[in-house]
Image (spheres, rainbow, N blue to C red):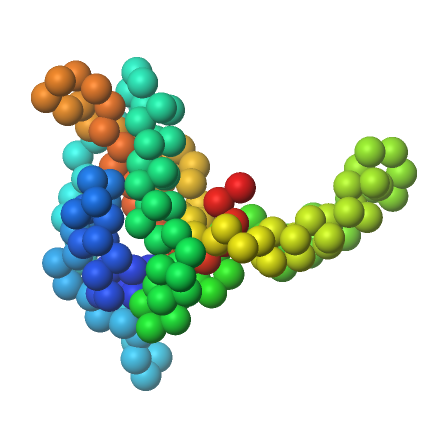
Length: 166
């Protein structure tokens, strides 16, 4: 959880909140040291797992994240900013067992043959940003704004880092 600790201790949460993307606010962060565990104390997110209009609101939240870290800002966030140099959990380096189990014939066989090229192409893409890394329903709550619309409250930034937004 060193990268998540960096997300909170190096100002990334504050930066996203200032841009209009709700995340927990860090109250206290202790990075791992000499065998000790990482400690992250953050504000409570008060919301529910679903909300009418939540999908569109979450896409807007992602747009704020990607715009905040587009281009060279992603490099800075992953260098001295402590985020993952290869963001997301869904790049081929993290899925070798699944890749090995893919069939060798039919469309899966063709996809297996192309997977390494797709992965390399996405890593080389010039249009890089910081991605959440594990953007799924389990990491999103929704509050209701004063106007009744959905407001995504996003957490779990362990895999946040530089990647192609596609």
